[in-house]
Image 1 (tube, rainbow, N blue to C red):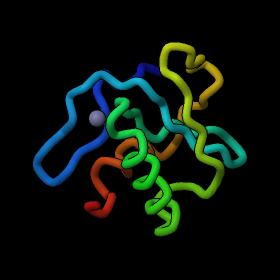
Image 2: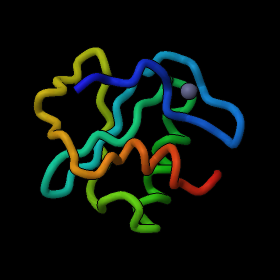
Image 3: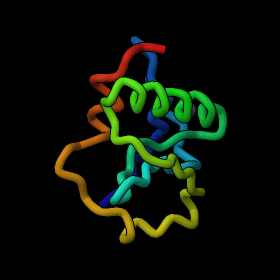
Length: 94
Ligand SMILES: [Zn+2]
């Protein structure tokens, strides 16, 4: 699995191009990578994930934030559903 090379924050027209510092994943029975974020958008990404969980667009579970520099991606399983796609394309605008 490869990590995205830019922050997942996007508004209707603007995609943040800053290289991400944090990896957001959800822990339920398994661990799912959901999004990455730069320093500036950390709180917004967190808020967006919570709102998607409330709408049942993302799995319920504990949100874990990891520093990308120390992430060991091999402990995160590939997903049948692409949750990053959910995050980008099916999420409500904030
Ligand atoms: Zn950003």
